[in-house]
Image 1 (cartoon, rainbow, N blue to C red):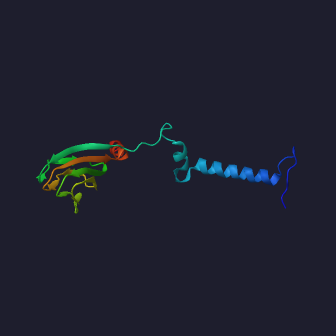
Image 2 (cartoon, helix red, strand yellow; image 1 turned 135 degrees about the horizontal axis):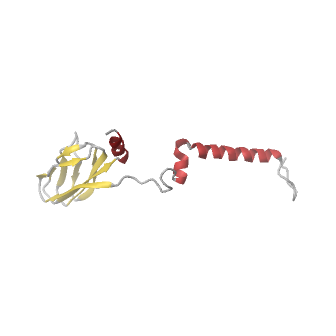
Image 3 (tube, one colour; image 1 turned 180 degrees about the vertical axis):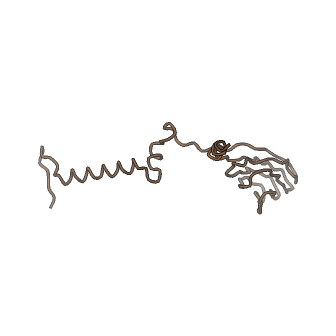
Length: 152
């Protein structure tokens, strides 16, 4: 049986109680911020701005038209990862020199991005018979840099 309210008649107490409980539960979820809900909804904690991802920092740009050993470069010890944005015109492109597997190993013509996590000094070995370009960028964790400064 459904109760129909006549004009001017107040809501039944059970409906008011249910609505109050829903509002209290919603306030608890938002106020307690489980799983960072409040932070994601209202970007709390950084002046109301959306959280900014750390930008990719350029490390070195390389290019050539044959196999080469690139000039050494250094990946910051606080880098979470680094990438090589690459392109090649013909033949096959193999870029290695860090870790157990190549950063790039592909037929050409093509372009793409390879990733690595090794930090410190690095030298890339480029094996190809065609024109190529490489742009190395690192993604440095700002929290790691801040934590390192605090311990000094």
